[in-house]
Image (cartoon, rainbow, N blue to C red; front, side, top):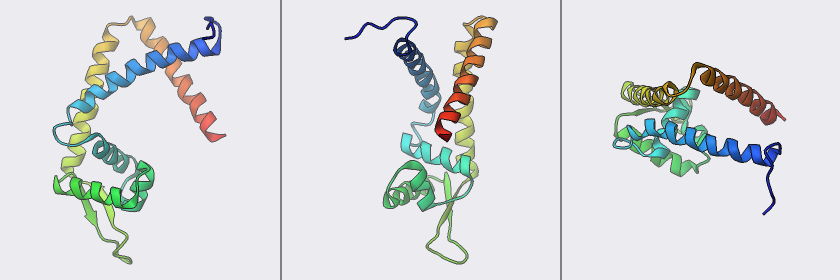
Length: 151
């Protein structure tokens, strides 16, 4: 195994990876609140519909990297629980559109509040300077990631 020095990109990537795992675990704690209601794939679908507005089932499948039949079954389950509503297309009844119901929006709001509350508890254990440095670092990381994804 190669030795990783503190000034190497490999070492830094490993350290950031470990910190990111902590962040992902903290983020997931907010999702735990929804686990009695929906599965993780169903929650991903709800977040996708929320982010992109009403979607066709096919587009939702593409966003989730799922087969159209799998996306359709996922929507069936979410519609049965009252979290998602389907509407047949006006010109093409096969182009079914899905959108969040008020109950679906409320569930996502609850998840977001739980995530924010848990992250707030962790951030409260950091100094103001550490919180500022974290925010600045994550902001720059997000910008660099966006540039890398544009290439």
